[in-house]
Image (cartoon, rainbow, N blue to C red; front, side):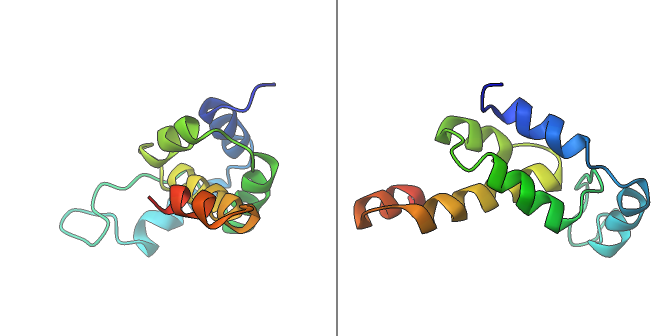
Length: 101
């Protein structure tokens, strides 16, 4: 299977916890007028997001950008976790700067 943003989304959706999906909007204050107003949640716990990020650690930058623009919180966080992983594995200051930029 090709490493794509769609593949990451499918993997995250396979790990949905309905109880967390119901709880997260309250926890992250996603209601009208609140801190994260309108944010959407799949209900995937962070340890599972880290596993998915590790699985897709070589995801191309253009696909990471798609995750960062996703309406779901977990997709965006997983995209950031992939970038952190790529930064930590970068073999030069130039490569790290490219990730930061």
